[in-house]
Amino acid sequence: PVAKSNPAPKHTSKSKSAPISKSPSSIFYAECEKGRLVQEVLCRWWYAIDWPGQDCLSSPGPNYDALSAFPGVFVCTVGDGVGEILDRRDKSTCPNFENMVKKGTEELKGLLEKAIKGQKKELEKAGEKGSETDSNLDDVLRWCKSLKDGAVEREAEKTIKANNLKL
Image (cartoon, rainbow, N blue to C red; front, side, top):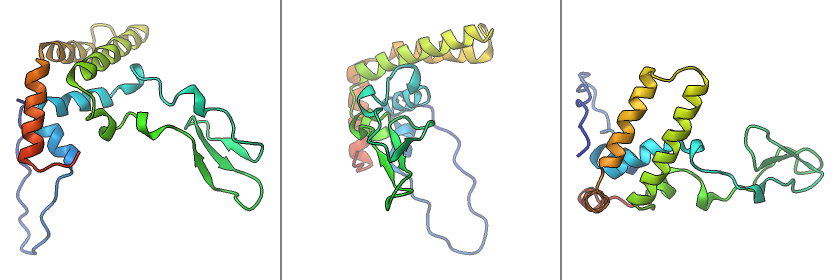
């Protein structure tokens, strides 16, 4: 199981406030190994996943300009639609919680291993081989390789059921 963090300090004010609700992702991240696996992939997905795909990068027409920081997203610059945003990226392949949690443990482990390899390569280029970050990545990789796919999936299902999560 994932190590539990210390509970948040209790609210000491005399005013009554609504209890803080936890999101399904925060519950999943905190309560099962698959949650941590998803989180570790999402922290470095760009080293392992080519997204968005090339198919969404072509301009939709002369009235649109690409938003350079967001490949596949365009803004209308001429006519009645000025300022309208057109997002041509495929949401079904987006590296987000919703899509990652649907993947099996084996695939997630493969993505994490690929991502860590890519991140370590960049660290080496930056002269940071042997750094604390490099060592932490080694720890995450050892943890990842130690996971038993079936056990991780069973624990995830128990977490989903116990918390009535809709993922």
